Length: 395
Ligand code: PMP
Ligand code: GLU
Image (cartoon, rainbow, N blue to C red; front, side):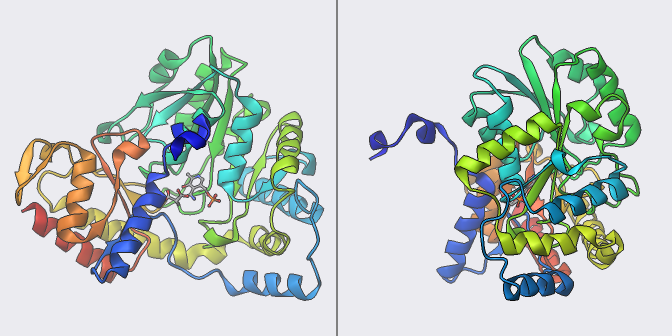
């Protein structure tokens, strides 16, 4: 039946994170004892003060269409957040609220990228960047990194990837999937390269900003010269455990914000009204309300890194943020375990699913064929059991 579908959709790959999560769910429903470490989703509940704001919004009848770019009160609250946390002076006219950061990214691609434009992606990159860029006619240009470089690119690598067709660079810090966090010094060195190429725009995906154990966080837009060429993407899904509420936002030069508004005016008419009112409470809250959750994630990070380091043949860095580890599993390639030959990260991940009942995501989905991604957004007990099983089936 695929010949009835558009070429556009036939060429699109399925999101590997969502596909693995769906497969794990299906196997669980069949009665298998699956531990899913595939999806990047906090296992905490949305804080009560945010739920209260949503209930109040329902009672106060926030039930009509909102302004396409988001409620004025929400945009003002987002500006306060950008000032408080990132020292960025956005005005409400720079803000667009969307149905998740994923839609923010999709809007940006659609309004910025022309057929054949190149977009630099430091790899590993978040799974959906690649397909979102392709959907807009852009050409993703991957810049590889490895566990040895803490999965970060160098200024020389950035410069070597730039061509006359380069339109943008997209990255996340803390990074999904590697958990790496770029310091102000590292970003300043990369920005220095970009100074020579004033027409290249930056997408800085800061959705894991608060899930950060490094003690420092830098928004690239706060580096001199970068503000007018950066689109800062953020959202409430990760920090406030609100993945299902579907609210993301951007701070961007006004002409880009206007274009994104025009785009979503034809596609969604704007984000959900109740979730927007709840988001006002979230972004206005002092980030210290997140301390409990962040220290739980840090404890799990330490646990998982410690346990994985005990497994022979797995190499990993110590990720400073997000809730993923991204071990290099390539020393297993070419080996046969329990009758299964493992040729690549896909095989490795499927082997763990089949033999250990543990769902992970292949690094191929993120542009790194040597690694797999493990999400540690679950309890220490479950994580300990999952890694025990992984160790057992690799022995
Ligand atoms: N960027 C990154 C790096 C992510 O991991 C995610 C995962 N959800 C998103 C964007 C999309 O976030 P949202 O749920 O707000 O669409
Ligand atoms: N961002 C999360 C992840 O990478 C959620 C899934 C998705 O949106 O793709 O697993």
